[in-house]
Image 1 (cartoon, rainbow, N blue to C red):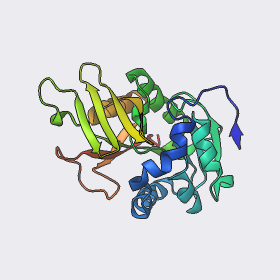
Image 2 (tube, rainbow, N blue to C red):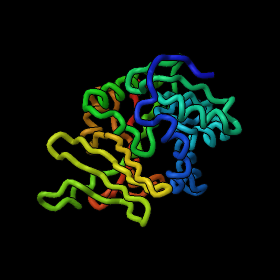
Image 3 (tube, one colour):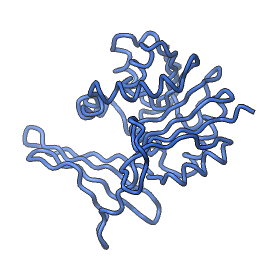
Length: 250
């Protein structure tokens, strides 16, 4: 079931949705998915899970197969259409809307945002609103999980604002940073049949300590922080983190 709202697909329209699974291939590797789902299933327990930015169902589908009821929120109908074409999708309810503010019925033992999706909210106010929205959905004792990269500002020498992360004969990709505003964008140039295609997706990078303050404003408290789904220690050399905040049971 998909709730019909008037929201647009934003930056994840048909062109992105059509190639999303292939372009994010490393994240669909069975070992990556299994490790993520193991952690989330353990945190969900016997309760329901809410995925913010459910997309094409990379995590929601295997999590539902583990017996966890999943409800998703996503702005992009094009992405959700890909989810609907996959086996097992009939078990997942999806609401079309902005996950920073959209409410769905019931409460959840787990809410989660994976693969840098918190950065799709491009202002601090939207990110704070997301934490408050999640807190309103969580049952007492429930958890909110975010997987997000650590900003790669250490790779920026003075006067430079670009960090390349893919270079090949037919495609180039790079991040642009504005350290004054924490605005950034991921930019892609592809040559297809001799013609260049360019697209840019805006983000707002966010620090772990800033996320902790957002959680505090929403009435949540930090339970765990790891450098990945394998639960290794988060250190000053970690390039990403998986953080777990909980809603106090009292």
